[in-house]
Image 1 (cartoon, helix red, strand yellow):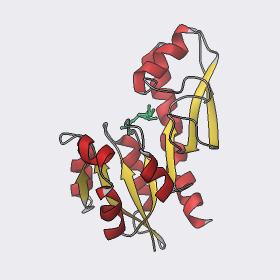
Image 2 (cartoon, rainbow, N blue to C red; image 1 turned 45 degrees about the vertical axis):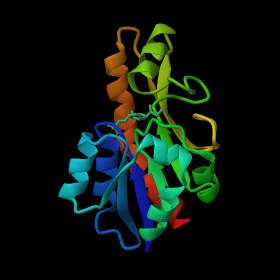
Image 3 (spheres, rainbow, N blue to C red; image 1 turned 30 degrees about the vertical axis):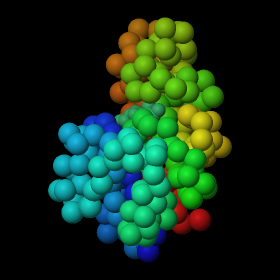
Length: 188
Ligand code: GAR
């Protein structure tokens, strides 16, 4: 069995799709859900699915390596960042080299980097009158959104699409592809 930890800070719609896709999987299990927000809806979703959770504190995350002990306890082989906005510290990148995948709501290398998350991305794409946007699934290194790209998918943008419409279209692609890409990375 390969064990995954999902890191999520937001509504957790991607985390929910990953959990649903891997439910009763023969060889992959979502063994832990980690959030940095006590009120994140993703923690309720975890409880509903009987998945253990861990709440991250900034001081611990950046100034200690205690998290590695937690990840070892749950025998975590792979980490999926599904709407997790803190920069991954070097000790974690090194312990999980090419074993952390992030989903980003744009076609990297455009619209990446610090501050480029969630709606900020879609507003920038809209302001620049882009004709397409999409998703990037990439391995995580010490820099925001710079790790090697695993997969991209795009969607066209109509001139009348506002940022919230772009967000919805991109989210459809996220839900469509992130769970299966994670599965294929783990079956490799
Ligand atoms: C997703 O759109 C994801 O791509 C984005 O946060 C959203 C989380 O949604 N991540 C980033 O912007 C990372 N830079 P969710 O909580 O509904 O899965």
